[in-house]
Length: 244
Ligand SMILES: *Cc1c(COP(=O)(O)O)cnc(C)c1O
Image (cartoon, rainbow, N blue to C red; front, side, top):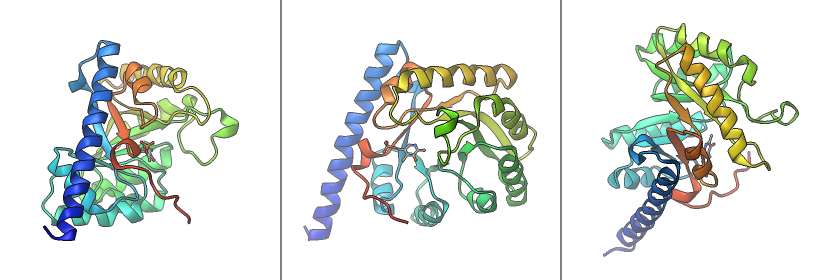
């Protein structure tokens, strides 16, 4: 075996082992919550990792891929498509209105719609591209004073953002997303998110997704009804600190 082939099979084994551990954590959390593991979808958040890892994850049966920056996600989605991989792309990062046109080119789901203007821009651009994009309202779970820079609509604004998505013919309102607050217990924050998700579902019965839970807190999120967990570190390993 060449060194390169050896490195690939070593990485494949590492990803397979991490994937088994993550699936076991999801299954255990589902058992504890009396839920069916089939109702929790794993999204592999591959930011900072190369397309070669996405190829290996796909070989292991992972089809849902998350990315948080357009400048990185666009080229990776194009390379994966060129390699013939059938994947669903989830855009999970903060999104500027002027990037909406690019993101609708590859994203199947945008988790981070947190303002009306962004919903309108995504709807317009998806229409032009002839695509229908599923969108989640990102809800801020931070104290208002700490929320700056982390994205997310204030809970009071969520119904209006949800309605703005639902009003766009090229968008489908799919549910809500949240990120646990820094330095606070995740469970109560996810409990608040679940209540907001239920309110949104009452007005929009198709909005069934609840995107919550990362490597450190997937158990708490599943206990509070997460339908989609977004897992990076536990699957792929530690990310190098990113310096802008
Ligand atoms: C990076 C990221 C994740 C994954 O985080 P890990 O702690 O590495 O599992 C999930 N959601 C969002 C929005 C992210 O940016």
